[in-house]
Length: 186
Image 1 (cartoon, rainbow, N blue to C red):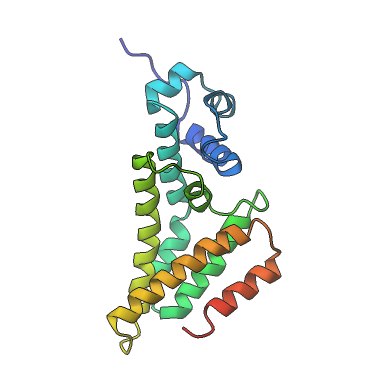
Image 2 (tube, rainbow, N blue to C red):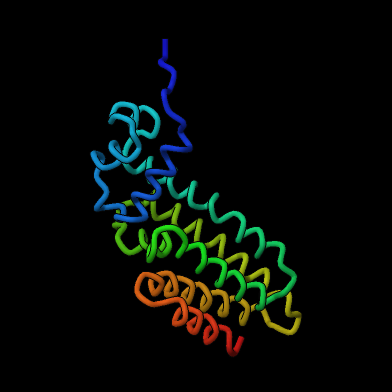
C-alpha cells in the first residue's frame, strides 16, 4: 500500500523554486533542497525523481507565478505599449520580495550545461512563450512587415534577458531608463 504524502506538493515546489532562484541550479544541492522543502530525500525522489525533476517543476511554478502579467500582455490591444508595460510589470515582479533576484529562467540559462537537454528545452519553451506574446503584440501594427516583427521580437527578448540580469545590479531608476531606451525607436 502506497503511503500518503505528508506535504503539499505545490508548497514544497514553491520553496524549491525560491532556493533555485536564489542560489542557481548548480549551487543548489539535494541536501539544501531537503532542508528548504522540509521533506527527506526519499520523498523528494519518490515525487520528483531527482534534482532535475524538482527544478523542472520549479520552472512550471515560476511560469504560473508570472501568469498575471503574461495574461495582461496576451490580452493587450496596445501593441508596443503593451510590451513596454510588460517590461515594467516584469521588473516589478523580479524585484518584489527578495531584492536583486532577477529572473529564474535567465539566471538558470547562464549555468545550465548543454547536456541538460530536458532543462534547456523547458527554458526555451518558457522564453519562446514570451517571445510569441511579443510577436502577437507587434503584429497589431498592420504596417509592420513580418521580417521586422520577428527581428523586433528577438531584439525585445535580448533586452528582457539583459534587463533581468541588470536588475540584480542596478537601481530602479537605471532599470526604468533601460526600458525607456529599449522602446524609444520601436
